[in-house]
Length: 117
Figure 1 (cartoon, one colour):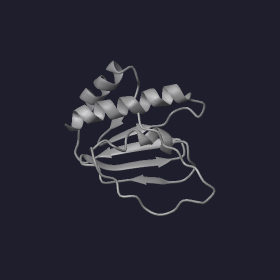
Figure 2: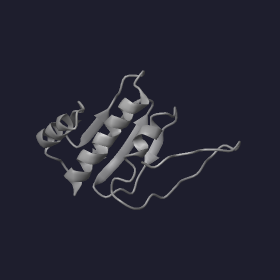
Figure 3: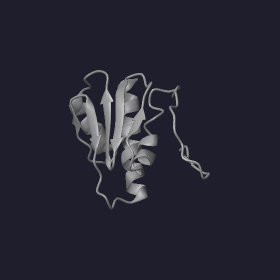
Figure 4: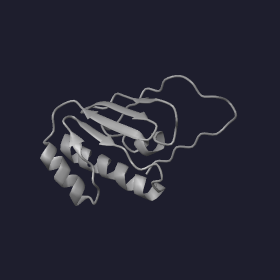
C-alpha cells in the first residue's frame, strides 16, 4: 500500500490533479479519515465522488451497482459495509484501530475495483 508522508513546517494549500487507475484514491480514504478538514478527491473513472468529513467516508459511483452483489462481496471480504444506492458509506467507530480501518478501506477498494471493471 502507498504511504502518505507530510513533512515540513509550512502549511500546504492548493489543488492536486489525480490521474491513473480508477480506484487510485480509495487507499487514500483511510488517510483522509485522519484529518479534521474536508477532503476532495476527483478524476476517477467509474467513481462520481469521494467525500470524507471527520470519520465519515463516502464513495459515490457514477452508475447504480448491483447493491445485493456488493453487499455479498463485502461480507465475503469479512466486513460489514452496506452500500446505499450509488453510494458506499464508511462510518467507523471513533476508536477503530488502524488495522481495522485498513481492512475496511481495503475491502472497499477491492470490491469496487471488481464491480467497476
